[in-house]
Image (cartoon, rainbow, N blue to C red):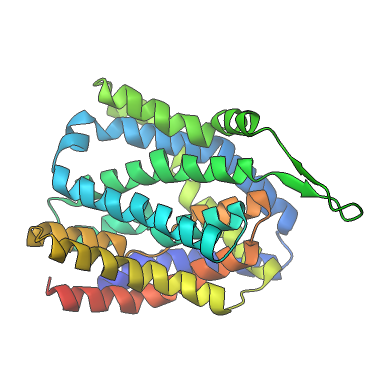
Length: 316
């Protein structure tokens, strides 16, 4: 199982390191990272989301409802709870609260899930990955973009007057972004029974399939430019994602006496490492870039041990 964990997480670390090395060699810099992120957010990621969701099919979406419900509770409920804590208790800005919420409640299911979950739940893996990907791409990602967009205010240094953009215009602007409307549109088509044949799916997978690699390489460049800093916020983000969230969802399911197989699948899914999307957003919107990149790096190291502990604890 340790080999499975390493095989799932090592490509992420290697790609991050390659991006970092390219920055150290001055082959790529922050300006190149911005260009890569623009390509990812405007083209490759929307194509990947649209094609992936349509390829999932309506039947898969409605299969195994209990697993879908509990993963939804873990991801969306976790997002809302973390956002409330960051925004109203810790008094973080809306943008920082949104990024921390996505970081803590959003596991990297599309990248790590197939390898890791495939070895534990071979017959249910496709379903779990599809459910997790749908929840992240249809709920968490659009919500985060909207929150990042609506937090666009300017504070004048001279007169301290705050200029707040019109909320309605910001929301409309957010929904114009391909990364928001593409997965929502794909979900609507999928629910109406429209799916992609393998021939048509290839049109979305050529560029869309490069999303993960480009994102991680770009984050590696950001890590070199911003320099990883393992401060308290980074440790709290990492431990919350890899330890606290799976533990809480496990205890809640045990309290409601959920079927053991559903508990195992949901807990393992919620214990997967941080998704790279939060770091991409941080770079695009210029919010907590170093914190998000450092969290991604640290969480991939910690996940090797935390996932092993979860497997032992669940006796899978």
